[in-house]
Structures are given as C-alpha cells and as structure tokens.
Image 1 (tube, rainbow, N blue to C red):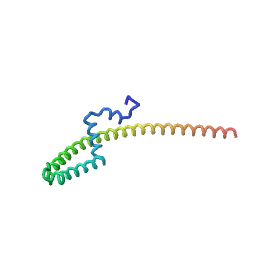
Image 2: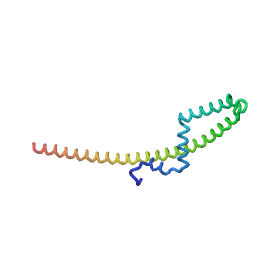
Image 3: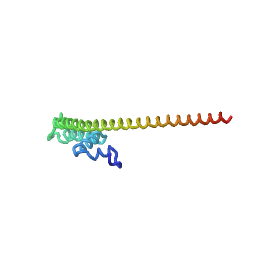
Image 4: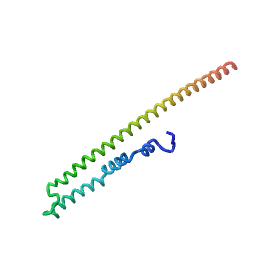
Amino acid sequence: MTDHGKTWHDQHKASLTKGQRAADIMRNGMGSWPFVGSFIGFMMIWAGINTWALVTHAWDPYPYILLNLLLSMLAGLQGAILLIAAKRQDAIAAVMAQHDYDTNLKAKEEIELLITINREQLAILQELKDIKDSARTHRS
C-alpha cells in the first residue's frame, strides 16, 4: 500500500464499480427490518384494496395471481443480488485472510529475530557474570 492514510478496506471500497455498490446497497436494504415491515405493509394494502375496496372492480382479485407473480419476480431478483453481494464478500474475506496470513508470517519472523537477539543478550550477560565471578575469585 502506497497510501498509508487509507486502509486496504477503504481502498477496496473506493475501487468498486457502480454495479457492485448497487448490489451492496440493495443487499443492506433488503436485509433490514424497515424493508420487511414495508413489504408486509405493501402486501396487506394490496390485499385490502383488492378484497374490500374494489370487490367488483379489483385488478387482481383473490387469490392475487398478479401479486404472486410480482413476489416471484422479486424473489428471483433478490436471489441474484444476494449472490452477487455474497460473491463479493467472499472475495473480500479471502483477500483479508491472505493479508492476515502475510502479517502473521512477518510478525513470526520479527519475533524469531527478537528471540535470537534476546538469547545473544543472555549469553553476553552470562559472560559478564562469569568475568565478574572470576575477578572476585582472583582478588580473594
């Protein structure tokens, strides 16, 4: 990463196409309680208008064939949008996992280097202790 001000995720978000952004927005919208509530409200209004208000002139009388057609088309469209968004999330997860793995390997190398330095320092301290002890024995 040449731009240290942005994280990998920020850079990835900036590189998304309009279609990918639309799929994310639609996935987030369709997976929300407001969408579920408004969808239930729409179906109740549709059924109410076609059952009570327009008994003789209903454009979609019971059993609501047109509504069933619209719901089937919506389900097909939602499935495709959710698959597009899931495929993108899988790609993001794979890249992030690789980044984590690379980070862990680099951290392992640095830890091994620190352990080596620590062992060398312990050896030097032991040599200094031995020199100090031998100096004491020569004075006595």
